[in-house]
Image 1 (tube, rainbow, N blue to C red):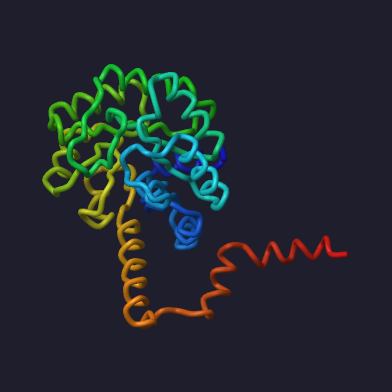
Image 2: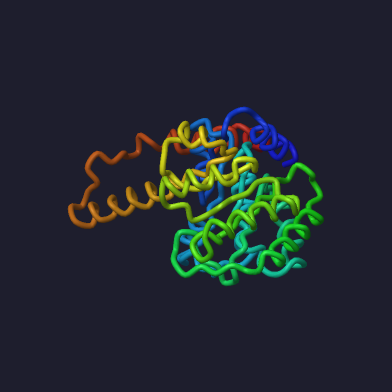
Length: 280
């Protein structure tokens, strides 16, 4: 796990912006790795959705850590994780960081929303006082045992409080020791440009799909977590079920010819070879 963390550090310190697609299960993680991505992002929205809940703070820290552990052991690339608000105050954040670290996270982000939180693109968000969030970040930094574990500070202050407060918080969180600053809720190109202009001297994370990654990189972001995969998986799966229910088939859908590819992706050939060593 330490190796994936050091590789993520190297990516973030390199000349190019890193891109990590949203994933919430191990099959998606393996597909992303095989596609050539150098890192993946465990989405809290998707992790909650996969368990039948909206992203409204309904999952526990334990449920999130279970998914971190499953994803981290399924791939050999860095895993960047949503850790919501840290699941409590500073002392809770310390346990969260240690649990995520033990589970194999290469990075995690903690946000400054009140609990229960909500998806960063939903209306009605509220944030805790800046000083409380700075204390959480200091606790997170004190708790990490591997210095390569990347601690990301997310602020959701844009919608409720505006850019002046976002700027104040971003600088305070960086001063508290956060490795990256994540301004969530950027919905327009103007907001994207404003973020890059006001915070150009800080290491920034961008969440969204407003522009192609090559264009996003021009604004100076160090990391982009790409949300398009989350929506695409939902849309195509929904459409396949609707078509199957309506027509009894999925036009152009693949069949058993994909089975060898899937079992290979999941490591079945290697497991079967290993099992032969123990045949009696």
